[in-house]
Length: 349
Image 1 (cartoon, rainbow, N blue to C red):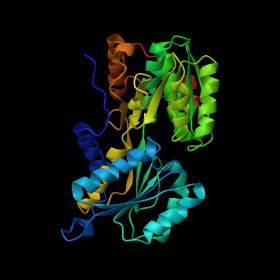
Image 2 (cartoon, one colour):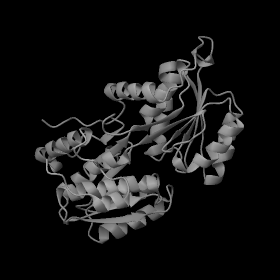
Image 3 (cartoon, one colour):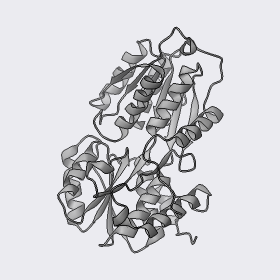
């Protein structure tokens, strides 16, 4: 039977994330002011340069804050970054405020967070997509290659041209996990499928995202996996007008942006991670250290093909479910680097 894929914050995902954070990340140093009934929980975040409205990474993190607002009556605040030069000033502004936890959303601000965390040792921070060594910082990373492997397998199953594409934001070790996981998944299904890789060089350049998607679709790719933040909105817009062209979304559930033409989205449950940390802080337990979430922890996964079940077909969906179980069981280990991809060989299930 095909397994149901996760489209958002599910009870199971929250429960699994809770186990992981309690076991690996929580600093059990007593209770803090956030546990006091008289204290209103105050949470804040600094966005990456894509900002709110990217319908992807930053918006997912913000949903986690909104969940905390709804659940705990938390006060929430957001500092949007227009460029990398804004990271440290934005983090400092929030550190000067009376916030219980400050979230840095994105690996690009890790160095700036290190400086601010050192300067404010009594404040508590969390970063998504990077590991920070400071004792007052909780770090959350994901096994993006796990979910991307399934995305690549799906693309290889559905492609008619035997050419598929990957469009990334900034070429970096993090984005390469998406890239090589996707390529390995395609190789698992059909080693003859060609994977074209391009990077925008930015997470907020919508026009360039559209231009590169035009090149990829025009060059024969009929499916493009778009992991480019707000730049990806341009790529999706280019795909929208092309017949027989499809996309795979990322980070948030983007399937409804163009119903029927976005095959699925590889969701990273950033919202779950943010909400779980907020829950710990609300209980007076300030997380520190690092944790990694993959398919096994429901930290990543494909959406449920709400608009594309008929297009994909039940047999392919069942095969994806089998691949998912193989990754969870350790029978398949998706690569996370280009060197690992070069050595990857398909696994006979």
